[in-house]
Length: 422
Image (tube, rainbow, N blue to C red; front, side, top):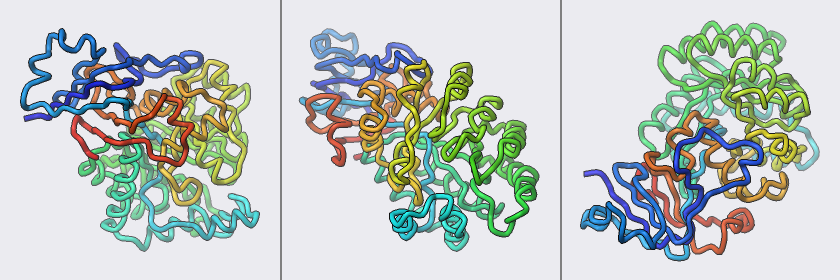
């Protein structure tokens, strides 16, 4: 028998949508429909019905909702949110990089650390030495941590392998996580994350390897939903990104691009050209890039955790939203530039550093994040028929308290796929 859960006396049921919408953009991001003093009924792993408590006893499904096989939860003074959809992470990795963290404190830049063999290349060496079993075990622990913090869907990239063997190793781990973990997972192939040392000075040969060997093998084993390229200063050029995305499209892998983190790289333009699902980072985004994005179906995804951790400039989020763009927010959970998957902290950073209001932030970490994973038809809002990925907060006074109270986990109970997880 499928689980049935009835949540009663909800102080505020947050982000309800009466019908499916893909995303919210511009001024629409500041609108959030909520229900005060609400109930929510979950059946067959999906959101079945919801409404005001005053209407509960006259609901046509009252007999089913109050039957003996329904788990009842009293959420008095607590709120219910759709789970966070974290559309950009690298949470399958081997080992931490806190020594580089100290190097950053001493003044070395991201690029200087990379040139010394640190950064992504450091993680690549560790991946090569680590078994699939250990990678799986460590990633499972990280996933359980982010679930407790409210995340119900996550995209995970490869990109620390940088060889056919090790990229496939990472992607196979992600495939196993998809099968075993209660969270919704999307997998992205990121062979073009950096150029391995053995190809130093022969970058074109490495790009050829990605196109001629890696992508066909990834597609053959059905290991990825998307393809990504780090199109930026010191990494992959616009032309190389174009070639990789074109090949990915031939194999059914839609693009999700690292773009414009370090400079105006052309990554946004090439991403939109190939109808990328998202372009991510975007610290360097000007009027031209905004106009290009406005005329596309590509989701601009901002990663404030990385800019915060690296001490870099923040993307012009306020200008982007005021220009009519949609915005998604993601954690960029990785060992080098954002070693945290805490989306509650991402909300706080967006409020403090991006000057986003709470309603905009909630839309960015739920519905728009789901869009950036190709899942907004199933996740990201309280909508009848969507997968029941939600969390119940502790007793909090307002939705604004979520970004305000940074550093505290305000999630009390997690329900994924209609089942109580924590």
